[in-house]
Image (cartoon, rainbow, N blue to C red; front, top):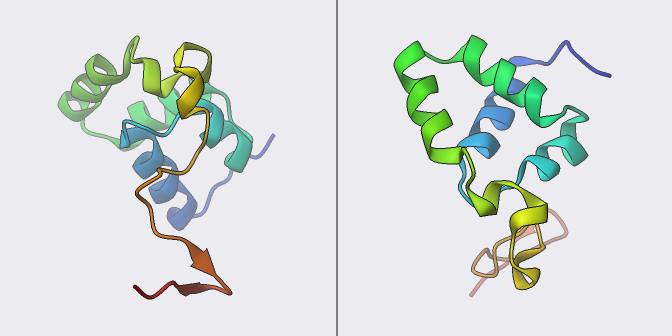
Length: 92
């Protein structure tokens, strides 16, 4: 299990954890860390008040836990997110 993350990886983990529609399973899939390890990173990297606010928001939130999500939202990507092809953002 990888424990030494770069600053960029830590920033991405925190960003994904803050996103309401990104489940902890997506973070585990991408970075190989459990929900508990994500929580520990958030606790370590954030101010105490910000951490408490985040924990209050995500606790029991169905979109943060894949098993609690409705069947139609079992994807990691938002339906409103633009497609990316060939590493270039698709044009309108």
